[in-house]
Image (tube, rainbow, N blue to C red):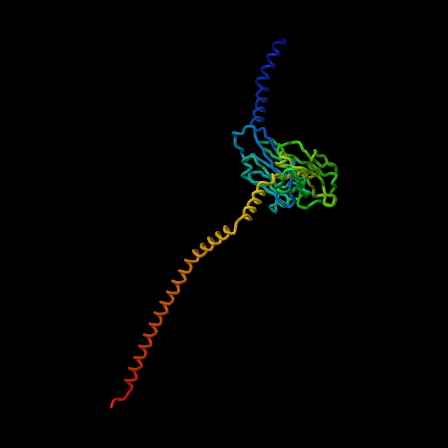
Length: 346
């Protein structure tokens, strides 16, 4: 057998035997192509409810998910709960008590989000979502972090050219700040409107800011910080976003709006006071007379109603007196009649 014949034979073997297998594998992969998407980190406030997203998709989105071929397992070291054979089975103590659950209806739409209640991000940190569909497996890892809660005023009214200060505070979850808190690891950044570059920041215990701006962190209360605009300019009005971060925590945000102070309204108020002070005596007397007549007119209907009520009471009293008089007369006649009947006839 020469080289040409061997080449043709190998080609026939490839087309008959190997190519169908490759096409079959390619078809299976493209029909499923399972992909799990989950966020790397989720910020949680200890003691509150937390949602750990786990979204799975197939390449062919036109084909609905066959729930009977789906398996989901959530683990945090040990297994928390699973979905298999059309049932959600709790495994951990938390799941058995109803503190960890999935929504079966959402699974049909590719959503295997784990819902946790009474969370403790200081202890339970790493969660794995393992999804299997048609013997194809993919997974996602979600890390829980205590969320930094930032509190700033919603808005501040500042007059132009004056100094204006925004006072804020933060806490690591609902526990405030721990005794081991170290301000040198604290990071605070301020942003103006939609600008992605910070104009003031506090990192590694050092302040960095633009001219006309200052910021500080309280040494007495390290959870309190401030931003000061030394002389408010027209361009300074807008929205200020502060981002606070601390190691092993999920960053927190707060937004404060800086509005222009209303000097014009103050002038209008002063002008109205001056115009009132400039009234003459005749103006005041005239207004008092108008008010007095108005009060009299308002009292007229009340007095008329009072008179009508008195007349009704008098008429009622007269009718009552007449009725009583008639009753007395009738009783008197009956007594006289009875007395006459009792006398003996001679």
